[in-house]
Amino acid sequence: MIEKLESIKKENRLLEALTSTKGKYIIGTVLLSGIGIALPRIFHVLAGASAGATFLPMHIAVLIAALIFGGLSASIVAGSSIIFSYLLTGMPSLARLPYMLIELIIYAVLLSVLNKKFNSYISLIATIILGRVLYAGILFIAINGLGLPTYGISVIDSIVTGLPGIAIQLICVPFIAKTIKKGINLDD
Image (cartoon, rainbow, N blue to C red; front, side):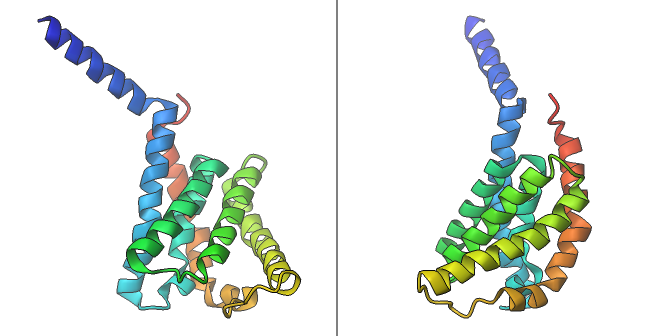
Protein backbone atom coordinates (compact mmCIF):
# COMPACT_ATOMS: atom_id res chain seq x y z
CA MET A 1 0.00 0.00 0.00
CA ILE A 2 2.80 2.44 0.92
CA GLU A 3 4.62 1.59 -2.32
CA LYS A 4 1.49 2.39 -4.30
CA LEU A 5 1.11 5.75 -2.52
CA GLU A 6 4.77 6.57 -3.24
CA SER A 7 4.25 5.66 -6.89
CA ILE A 8 1.19 7.92 -7.10
CA LYS A 9 3.15 10.77 -5.45
CA LYS A 10 5.96 10.37 -8.01
CA GLU A 11 3.45 10.35 -10.88
CA ASN A 12 1.79 13.49 -9.50
CA ARG A 13 5.17 15.27 -9.21
CA LEU A 14 6.02 14.31 -12.79
CA LEU A 15 2.62 15.48 -14.01
CA GLU A 16 3.04 18.77 -12.11
CA ALA A 17 6.50 19.26 -13.61
CA LEU A 18 5.30 18.55 -17.14
CA THR A 19 2.28 20.84 -16.85
CA SER A 20 4.11 23.72 -15.17
CA THR A 21 5.02 26.77 -17.23
CA LYS A 22 8.68 25.72 -17.19
CA GLY A 23 7.77 22.19 -18.29
CA LYS A 24 5.64 23.52 -21.13
CA TYR A 25 8.48 25.84 -22.15
CA ILE A 26 10.99 22.98 -22.28
CA ILE A 27 8.67 20.52 -24.04
CA GLY A 28 7.54 23.20 -26.52
CA THR A 29 11.12 24.16 -27.31
CA VAL A 30 12.10 20.53 -27.91
CA LEU A 31 9.05 19.87 -30.08
CA LEU A 32 9.59 23.02 -32.15
CA SER A 33 13.23 22.03 -32.59
CA GLY A 34 12.03 18.72 -33.99
CA ILE A 35 9.63 20.55 -36.29
CA GLY A 36 12.49 22.80 -37.36
CA ILE A 37 14.38 19.69 -38.45
CA ALA A 38 11.42 17.83 -40.00
CA LEU A 39 9.73 20.64 -41.96
CA PRO A 40 12.69 21.40 -44.26
CA ARG A 41 13.06 17.71 -45.00
CA ILE A 42 9.35 17.41 -45.84
CA PHE A 43 9.50 20.47 -48.10
CA HIS A 44 12.60 19.12 -49.87
CA VAL A 45 10.94 15.75 -50.47
CA LEU A 46 7.69 17.29 -51.72
CA ALA A 47 8.99 20.30 -53.66
CA GLY A 48 12.62 19.54 -54.53
CA ALA A 49 16.07 20.79 -53.64
CA SER A 50 15.26 24.51 -53.83
CA ALA A 51 12.24 24.23 -51.51
CA GLY A 52 14.19 25.46 -48.48
CA ALA A 53 15.17 28.74 -50.12
CA THR A 54 11.67 29.18 -51.55
CA PHE A 55 9.43 28.24 -48.62
CA LEU A 56 11.78 28.97 -45.66
CA PRO A 57 10.47 26.04 -43.60
CA MET A 58 13.12 26.25 -40.88
CA HIS A 59 12.08 29.84 -40.17
CA ILE A 60 8.55 28.72 -39.29
CA ALA A 61 9.49 26.79 -36.14
CA VAL A 62 11.80 29.59 -34.98
CA LEU A 63 9.16 32.28 -35.49
CA ILE A 64 6.49 30.23 -33.71
CA ALA A 65 8.87 29.64 -30.78
CA ALA A 66 9.60 33.39 -30.58
CA LEU A 67 5.90 34.25 -30.43
CA ILE A 68 5.03 31.59 -27.86
CA PHE A 69 8.10 31.18 -25.65
CA GLY A 70 10.39 34.14 -26.42
CA GLY A 71 13.89 34.75 -27.69
CA LEU A 72 15.83 32.14 -25.73
CA SER A 73 13.54 29.32 -26.81
CA ALA A 74 13.51 30.53 -30.41
CA SER A 75 17.32 30.80 -30.42
CA ILE A 76 17.58 27.25 -29.09
CA VAL A 77 15.16 26.11 -31.80
CA ALA A 78 17.25 27.93 -34.42
CA GLY A 79 20.55 26.45 -33.27
CA SER A 80 19.36 22.92 -32.67
CA SER A 81 17.33 22.81 -35.88
CA ILE A 82 20.23 23.95 -38.04
CA ILE A 83 22.89 21.80 -36.38
CA PHE A 84 20.83 18.62 -36.21
CA SER A 85 19.45 19.17 -39.70
CA TYR A 86 23.00 19.44 -40.99
CA LEU A 87 24.11 16.34 -39.07
CA LEU A 88 21.11 14.27 -40.22
CA THR A 89 20.64 15.51 -43.78
CA GLY A 90 23.66 17.60 -44.76
CA MET A 91 21.41 20.66 -45.14
CA PRO A 92 22.14 23.49 -44.92
CA SER A 93 25.64 23.06 -46.31
CA LEU A 94 28.45 23.52 -43.84
CA ALA A 95 29.49 26.72 -45.64
CA ARG A 96 25.98 28.23 -45.24
CA LEU A 97 25.34 26.91 -41.73
CA PRO A 98 26.88 29.81 -39.74
CA TYR A 99 25.19 32.42 -41.92
CA MET A 100 21.83 30.74 -41.58
CA LEU A 101 22.31 30.37 -37.83
CA ILE A 102 22.98 34.11 -37.52
CA GLU A 103 19.95 34.90 -39.67
CA LEU A 104 17.57 32.75 -37.64
CA ILE A 105 18.86 34.03 -34.30
CA ILE A 106 18.32 37.59 -35.52
CA TYR A 107 14.69 36.70 -36.30
CA ALA A 108 14.29 34.90 -32.96
CA VAL A 109 15.51 37.83 -30.89
CA LEU A 110 13.82 40.56 -32.95
CA LEU A 111 10.41 38.88 -33.00
CA SER A 112 10.44 38.11 -29.29
CA VAL A 113 11.39 41.73 -28.45
CA LEU A 114 8.92 43.32 -30.88
CA ASN A 115 6.12 40.98 -29.82
CA LYS A 116 6.28 42.44 -26.30
CA LYS A 117 5.34 45.86 -27.69
CA PHE A 118 3.14 45.09 -30.71
CA ASN A 119 0.69 42.43 -31.86
CA SER A 120 2.08 39.34 -33.54
CA TYR A 121 1.30 40.47 -37.11
CA ILE A 122 2.99 43.85 -36.80
CA SER A 123 5.88 42.25 -34.92
CA LEU A 124 6.30 39.64 -37.64
CA ILE A 125 6.23 42.18 -40.49
CA ALA A 126 8.76 44.37 -38.69
CA THR A 127 10.94 41.33 -37.96
CA ILE A 128 10.92 40.23 -41.58
CA ILE A 129 12.00 43.71 -42.71
CA LEU A 130 14.42 44.61 -39.90
CA GLY A 131 15.81 41.08 -39.77
CA ARG A 132 16.84 41.21 -43.40
CA VAL A 133 18.37 44.67 -42.98
CA LEU A 134 20.42 43.49 -39.98
CA TYR A 135 21.36 40.27 -41.78
CA ALA A 136 22.50 42.28 -44.82
CA GLY A 137 24.63 44.46 -42.53
CA ILE A 138 26.22 41.44 -40.88
CA LEU A 139 26.91 39.86 -44.28
CA PHE A 140 28.45 43.11 -45.50
CA ILE A 141 30.78 43.26 -42.48
CA ALA A 142 31.64 39.55 -42.69
CA ILE A 143 32.42 39.68 -46.39
CA ASN A 144 33.92 43.15 -46.81
CA GLY A 145 35.29 43.84 -43.34
CA LEU A 146 36.51 40.39 -42.35
CA GLY A 147 37.13 39.03 -45.85
CA LEU A 148 34.99 35.93 -45.38
CA PRO A 149 33.78 34.15 -48.52
CA THR A 150 30.25 34.89 -49.73
CA TYR A 151 29.29 31.35 -50.78
CA GLY A 152 26.91 33.00 -53.21
CA ILE A 153 24.76 34.45 -50.42
CA SER A 154 22.69 37.47 -51.44
CA VAL A 155 20.07 39.03 -49.22
CA ILE A 156 18.21 40.48 -52.23
CA ASP A 157 18.16 37.11 -54.01
CA SER A 158 17.03 35.35 -50.83
CA ILE A 159 14.14 37.82 -50.42
CA VAL A 160 12.96 37.38 -54.01
CA THR A 161 13.34 33.58 -53.90
CA GLY A 162 11.74 33.40 -50.44
CA LEU A 163 8.60 35.43 -51.20
CA PRO A 164 6.37 32.31 -51.05
CA GLY A 165 7.90 31.46 -47.66
CA ILE A 166 7.40 35.00 -46.40
CA ALA A 167 3.76 34.81 -47.47
CA ILE A 168 3.36 31.49 -45.61
CA GLN A 169 4.95 33.06 -42.52
CA LEU A 170 2.65 36.07 -42.58
CA ILE A 171 -0.47 33.98 -43.13
CA CYS A 172 0.22 31.01 -40.87
CA VAL A 173 2.73 31.77 -38.11
CA PRO A 174 0.69 34.22 -35.96
CA PHE A 175 -2.40 32.01 -36.22
CA ILE A 176 -0.49 28.82 -35.35
CA ALA A 177 1.31 30.52 -32.44
CA LYS A 178 -1.93 31.97 -31.05
CA THR A 179 -3.68 28.59 -31.32
CA ILE A 180 -0.83 26.73 -29.61
CA LYS A 181 -0.44 29.36 -26.90
CA LYS A 182 -4.15 29.18 -26.13
CA GLY A 183 -4.09 25.37 -26.21
CA ILE A 184 -1.20 24.98 -23.77
CA ASN A 185 -2.46 27.75 -21.49
CA LEU A 186 0.84 29.38 -20.59
CA ASP A 187 -0.79 31.77 -18.17
CA ASP A 188 -0.61 29.18 -15.34
